[in-house]
Length: 270
Ligand SMILES: Nc1ncnc2c1ncn2[C@@H]1O[C@H](COP(=O)(O)OP(=O)(O)OP(=O)(O)O)[C@@H](O)[C@H]1O
Ligand SMILES: [Mg+2]
Image (cartoon, rainbow, N blue to C red; front, side):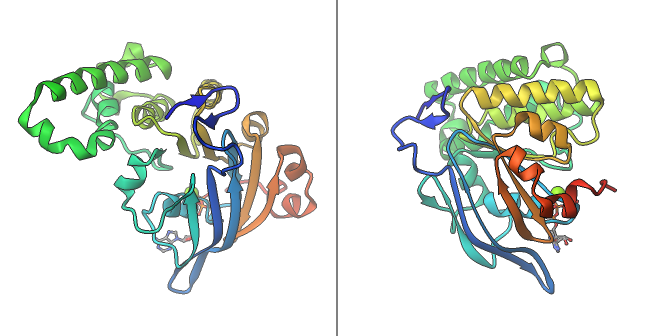
C-alpha cells in the first residue's frame, strides 16, 4: 500500500477512515488506573502529539496500542482493524512501529546491524525461507541491506554506519532508533519522547527528521514534553493527566485551554 505524501492518506483507503480509533480505553494495574476511559481519534496523515505530566499514562497508551499491555476495557481500531488479539509482532507487521522512552539498542552491534535488526519483523512469515537460503531470500536480504543504508542516510548517520551503537552520542542513538523503526515501512510511527535528554542542536536535527518522516506520508504519534517542539511540528495535540484525556485539538487551541494550562503547561517537568 502506498501513501500520498501531500495528504498522508493511504491509497485505497477512504480519507474519512481514521488511522486510529481509540474508544473507552481503560488500563488498570491492581489499584492504579493508568488509563481511564480514553477515547481518541487520530486521522490519517496526522502528526499527533501526546503531552502530559509524568505518570499521566502516555507510555501506557503506546504499550496498549502496540499490544505490549492488554487493556482492561475499551477498544483500539487501526485502519479498520480491531487490535484485540494480536501479538506485538503482529501489530508491527500491520505497520505500527515504535521507539522507546528508554533507548533500546544493541550496544556492541554496529549502527548498520542495529538498523537491519529492525527489518526482521517485516519478514516474520519468511523465517523458513531465511533458514533454507533460497534465491528469493538472498534477494530479500540484498534489498534489506540497501534499505538499511537508505534509512541510515535518511537519519544522517552514514558516517557512523560501522560504529558500535554503544559509542554514539545519545541524540544519534535516538536517530538510529528512528531508522530502525522506518526500515519496517510503518504506516504509523510511535515516538516516545524522541527529544528527551538530547542537546539543543540534536533537538533541532530530530525535529527536522520527524518532520521529514511525516512529510513522506507516515502517520506519527509523538509523546513529547518539549512544548515548543510540539507546537512547531504537531497537527493535533492531546493532553493526558492522571490517566484521563484532558483535552484534544489543534495545537493553539490546546495550548490556550485553561484546564491544560492549570494541569500541565504551567508546571515544570521534574
Ligand atoms: N507495568 C506496570 N505496572 C504497574 N504500574 C504501571 C506499569 N506501567 C505503568 N504503570 C503506572 O501507570 C501510570 C502511568 O505510567 P506511564 O509510564 O504510562 O506514564 P507516562 O505518562 O509515560 O509518564 P512519564 O512522562 O514519566 O514517562 C503510572 O502510575 C505508572 O506507575
Ligand atoms: Mg512515559
